[in-house]
Image 1 (tube, rainbow, N blue to C red):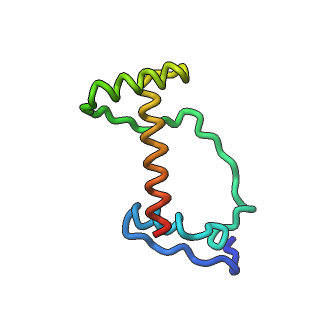
Image 2 (spheres, one colour):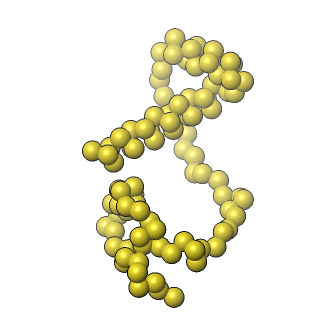
Length: 96
């Protein structure tokens, strides 16, 4: 059942265009969230790709030191740092 008070969701050329749209628009203007249902995707895992990355030894040692303080593997800490920074950069680019 379509709510006549809601705006129509535009068609997007690609995923990037859709991502920018939803980052700059309030979804509640387009979707009646009171009609939503909750689902659980317990077995869903993110797609991972192995890459080769050359880093100065000093950075690796510093990562290992910081990771040891947090009791996590240094590769996991590096992924967390990268994810945080990517999120910051994406958030910053949507504001401009």
